[in-house]
Image (cartoon, rainbow, N blue to C red; front, top):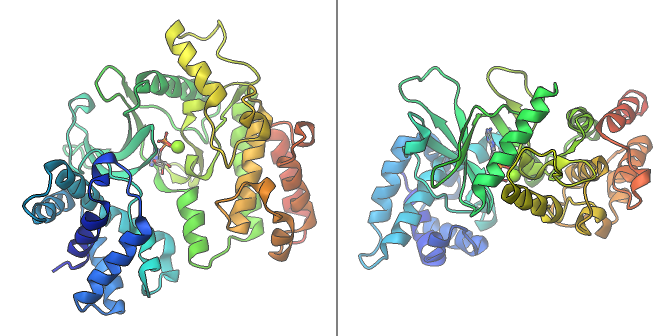
Length: 417
Ligand SMILES: Nc1ncnc2c1ncn2[C@@H]1O[C@H](COP(=O)(O)OP(=O)(O)O)[C@@H](O)[C@H]1O
Ligand SMILES: [Mg+2]
């Protein structure tokens, strides 16, 4: 019998309660503590906790949905139906979440020794749909694993059960009031960039469903992880990425960015959650740029040549000016200036610094990152490139992705690693 999910249900229900309706799961440290207490009370030794997690990880989407509904129905009779439904949706995604966490940890996974070790297994938010959900606008595709999402959209893996051999899809559903416009913009950007010849690191949009109450884009599913999952997971388990590995990763990213920049577009939201390492449709394992939702033309707004209605253009322009991620946005972006290729370069520099320093919380201009990186074996030449990328003075940064790639190529070959 699976002991891990009932204990999590009780911990989540007691502590998150009504928040399960709202979507996010705050108080995760307290939930982890309570979950740990429940497991100990049930007499489960620490070594058995890992075994239970491994067992839970083997449950597929259809079975997890069924199990989660059964478990949620078992909470006290007076529970509000929406809370119970939120609890079920949360629990239903746990097997996939646990599976992915265990995969990232790989051989470094240790037996959980306390509540803090359970924290990475806890969901950040409650997805809107149960796995195994069918939505009319998606035709024969059935939603499976929840793959992530922020305030604006949710991404689910999806398959057509009548075509089990077809590669999986990733469906991006938006619940934002302006979701239809934003997804239309994202699809348009992907298409434009791919048409101009940049096919390597940008996914094709396979279909658009914009006229339904929950608009959606359909992409090929990437078999892999986003860089946030990988880097945070590795650092948690004491594995620091080698500086040379980071330089090569950055070099690949710079190439893809270079292609975007030579189309005179800027991504504007380069961050670990928007980069994936993996492959799609039997392609090669590589870095992929996703979430072009706030990408736009370099150094200007959408302009008169933009083939969108006025209303949509106004929405896009607002996003182009105000949408950014505080940790990765360049000083200019934070001042709401129009973006240029050098803003993406700044963000790429921040990612490389974070990847080595293992600090995913502070802005790079608030920490003395240089001595940390030097202590971790980063050669002077690579440090200089990173310093230039995150320079407050824009002209000191490499001009665009291709310029950054050229500098990194030299460093990768000539520095002593
Ligand atoms: N095509 C895909 N295949 C697999 N996972 C994906 C795909 N697209 C997005 N994801 C996952 O979903 C997360 C959110 O997707 P994203 O497009 O960045 O949405 P948002 O606009 O909500 O940030 C990503 O960080 C990634 O982990
Ligand atoms: Mg994103």
